Length: 131
Image (cartoon, rainbow, N blue to C red; front, side):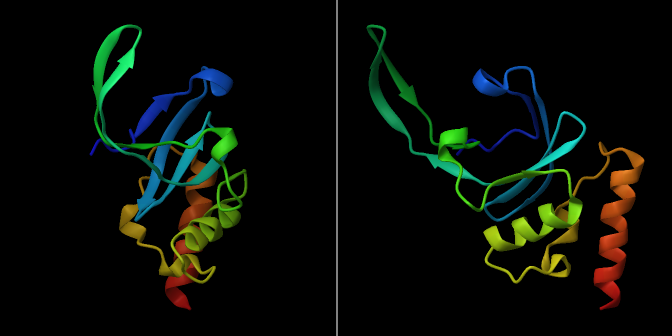
């Protein structure tokens, strides 16, 4: 199955918007969007399809993960500029209590974040480890 990309440029209603994956655990992802917002999503899945007629040509589609369109968003998918809200939302998608300490912190790649946001994440991690 084809996995969601680590980085991509949006199409359609989010045309030109850059998305960078900074967290993935189970079926939860956090993408950093255009250098200022976090989108927390539950990964969607598209099943493989064979012999699909498209423009007079038969095409096979492989199974893949997909980013939800705005019309697919549920209450678990959010867009926020708040680090704590993003982490709590990821916990809810994973069926965990709203405690970021329960997330797999090795699943984060904070390297693309501005220093202030990176420090916000690290502060939450440090607090979580002490509790």
